[in-house]
Every structure is written in C-alpha cells, then in structure tokens.
Length: 106
Image (cartoon, rainbow, N blue to C red):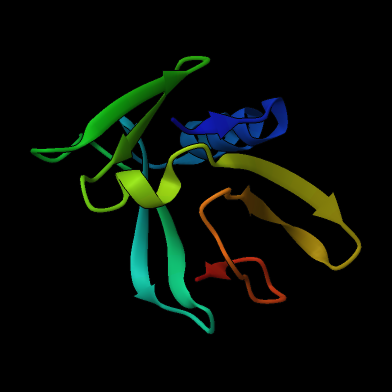
C-alpha cells in the first residue's frame, strides 16, 4: 500500500528515538484542506485506532485510517534534505494535481 524510502524510514526512526515517550508508530492521514483539496497529516502516536490498517516497513509501524487508505494507495514517502529545508515528500499516484509545496493534492 504505502512505501517508505530508506531515508524516510531513517527519519521516522530518529524522531521515534527522540520522542519523550516511545511511540508505537506513525499515523498517516489525508484530510480535507490545503491549497489543492487534500492535505497530508503525519504524527507519532502510541497505538492504532479501531479500523486502522497497520503496515510495517523496516520495523516502523504505519497506521492508516479507513478513509485515507484509498487516497494513499501506492504512495511513496521520502525524506529529503535540501537547501530550502528538510521534510517528507509524497509521490502519490492518486493525485491529479498538487500544490507547489508538495503537502497538498487533489
């Protein structure tokens, strides 16, 4: 369903190691909003919620809610370090359009 590059896995593991409480995994969601219609939301959480799909990539648990699953199917998440700043990028085959920041799609 979702693919994390090795750079993204390393970034998530680093964030998990620095967290004050050891998280269970990374929640990835799609919400209405952003400049293109939908926006990505990610955060470290303790456990999945009822109805979440749990995907494990290199010992990183990803929790994806039922509404977000079809919008994220086939997405590759990378972590890029650049002069403009560092952050996660999304290559989503379901996106017909995206904004220039790469955090929103439609």
